[in-house]
Image (tube, rainbow, N blue to C red):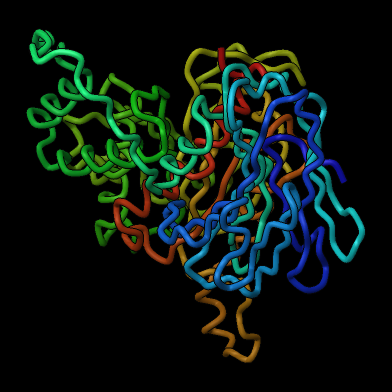
Length: 449
């Protein structure tokens, strides 16, 4: 099985038994000196324990869950890993002169019980001056492991990767100063867009100041400082959402997404879509009008019977790309669209929804689905009928996350029992996790100019 850049698959689909397998790197570097490494990361995608960086100077982890055999073969036994290790990222870094654009056709092979079960092929055509690459990521999700072919480059080498993952590198000994005369003072920096935004938030929505600052920190950690995008929030207004709205949980959640939109888009507005049996496009949510926004919406758009994802997705696509495009042909734009899609249940139009997400994969739109409710995945069948009735089946949203037949992987899904369950930092980490990997792929495939 060939794994394309940006493709995500369940590891169990490749490795049906056990948790042991290997990753072999067959590299044609064209004379460039390249080192491989595997980073064991925590839930925040940080190298919180540097003993879980596996490379030539540290060829095995303390638990023996990852080991480097030779220069370019990693052996994994995932069951040995402690629960604090949430992801494993296999990387390449140049040692000495050169750049990754010099790589000749190379491959990463996943081997199980001596048999190749998958391969990811790459070369230097996707890179320019980058000196390090994140090749693949193995990460925990829904009680199992998934594999994501990342293919993301960094202009720095191994040190840049370590710093990116929150590790530390030894500082070089500074040279003595050439002269005792201090250099002239640099001119004061011009006011930044971030400072202007924070002043605007303080004036128009002081209750969001803390949230906007937290978004800024999350974007910085994700390497997206200064990133611009249009943001849309798509809210389920089916009758089953009644308690979530009446308790104020959804109003608080919309403000958390508005804070993200304020950082991504300088117009201070969040495009909002509502769906139940029908779809509605109310006025956007603004910083100045954020207080009481959801309460005003529900007076105008009462909760409905039915849940139809497809009509909502179609309305969002038409809103941002009213002219559409030729079927199967990529649409390119300067800014991406980030859609936060929130629901508490299954849809009534699965076929339409699948068609929409496949067609939307040719557009620069990233779909972040969030299910609200206790998932019944792995539910104990011995539970009583009414206990199981209170649980939610998110199998279709999980399917959209890994749906085949798309131009690129354009969606992610996670579920929470309550919209206020994740902390602000945890929520923004989840919202950016797969989006930041989608961006370089969208550029590579011509969706982003």
